[in-house]
Image (cartoon, rainbow, N blue to C red):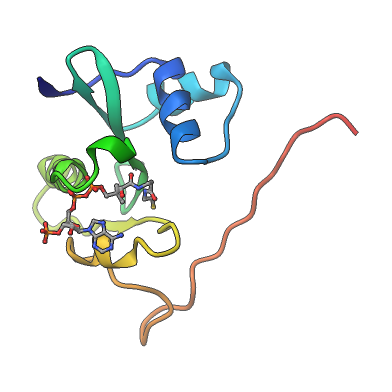
Length: 141
Ligand SMILES: CC(C)(COP(=O)(O)OP(=O)(O)OC[C@H]1O[C@@H](n2cnc3c(N)ncnc32)[C@H](O)[C@@H]1OP(=O)(O)O)[C@@H](O)C(=O)NCCC(=O)NCCS
């Protein structure tokens, strides 16, 4: 049975990242990703973790939607939609009258139409340049 929970273990989180081919981290760092998130949701089929989303928010005007992952075997069933909608709802519940929050994300290639369904706009556009990022990797030389 599918359920949506507010907890995930670092191991489960890393397994889901691995499943969709994303970068992995040490478990200590994965734990920080979970503990420091404003909201985390894990989708389970009985006990098995089959999806996740992380919402980061500084309490001010910047929020970041991260790690929207659904196990490929469960994609196309509306689970990704529920994860994104729950994140937006959680953010709205934390906002007070007059608040303005910019919710951003880094779309994986080809997933832009999925996010456009929830009001996200592809960059660059008339108001904003392309998003930019870099990986900082602490490694033995
Ligand atoms: C992107 C992802 C989370 C979507 O999850 P999902 O559970 O398959 O999505 P849903 O079934 O909830 O689909 C919701 C809507 O988005 C649409 N959609 C899903 N993936 C889409 C895509 N790649 N392009 C266009 N539309 C898409 C669905 O058709 C559906 O439309 P509808 O509600 O209007 O009928 C999932 O494909 C995934 O985990 N991919 C691998 C990891 C990844 O790339 N995540 C995004 C990181 S930025």
